[in-house]
Image (cartoon, rainbow, N blue to C red; front, top):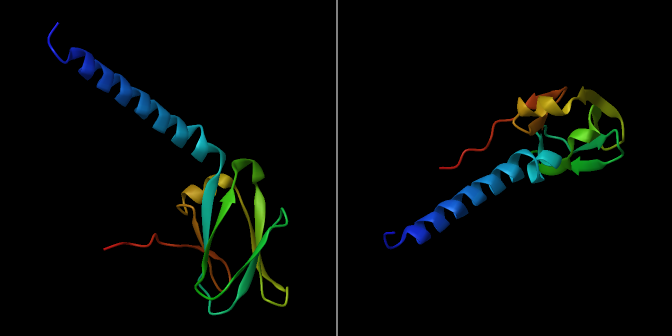
Length: 121
């Protein structure tokens, strides 16, 4: 047996193990149970985002907030309120819809909108 064969075999086994661990984390473990959903207030006013499950978060103009969500929490409606508590609009979402939004949802003046990912130079 040539020198270093055991070392190469060990490195290959380690690489296979790490690939399996990463695949599990992405598809079945960590990411499969909870995702960060980014909301960005695109308006010039402060608003409050309220979930059906009772969570609420204030967002100032142009503010962004990441909130953890799980597939089991959906379908669910999100309500946009002004600072007086008056509902401006609401929409019912399915968890699968967020893939189309790339898990980034914009709060517009009259409806939820798609938000582009920020680009880095």
